Each structure stands twice: as structure tokens, then as C-alpha cells.
Image 1 (cartoon, rainbow, N blue to C red):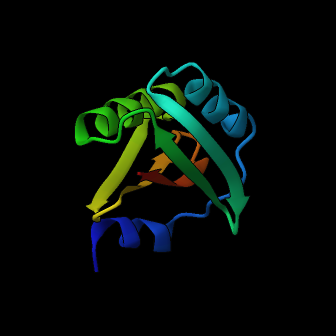
Image 2 (cartoon, helix red, strand yellow):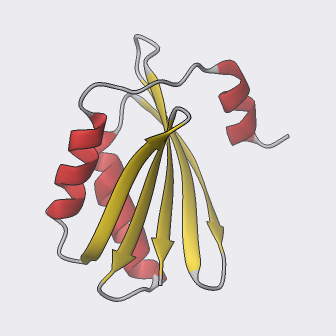
Length: 108
């Protein structure tokens, strides 16, 4: 079992007030983002992002900026690379045990 799945089994995720707006605000302010969509499905924020130019450097930059904008005290993530997309599975937990999970899809 990988680390992210171990955390998921031991943390209760929910809709966290303000996170949806913070996600949208962060991505609206990023010039490398061409378009994005955010949904909340089964206690997971699903974020789909298309960049002006799809490359690893731009993906890492946008992801880093997003995390910096929305993170709680603890942040865990893993990245998986595929031919036409890069996916991050992100978990953030506050000191008061509020937690959220995001799946961030960067697509060509």
C-alpha cells in the first residue's frame, strides 16, 4: 500500500469552506493556465487544467503555486505521468484535523 492511500484510509475528507473559491482564485490568476474546471465529487476536489503550453516545467510551476495558495499545515502528494497528462493526488490536513483531497489533472 502506498503512503497516499494509507493516509486516505485514516482521514475523513469533506468539503472545506473556502477551498473551492481559493482553487478558482489561484488558477484565474495564473497566466500559464488556458482553462480549468473544478468539481467536488465524493469528497474529492477534481481539478482539470489545460495550460497555454503543456510541459513539465509549467505543470510543476502551476501546481506549486496552487498548493502554496490552498495548503494547510501538512501537505502530501504524489505525481503520476502519462503520455498526455500529469496527475497529482494531493492531501492537505490542518492542525485541527480538517482535511481535503484534490485530484489535479494537467492535460494536453
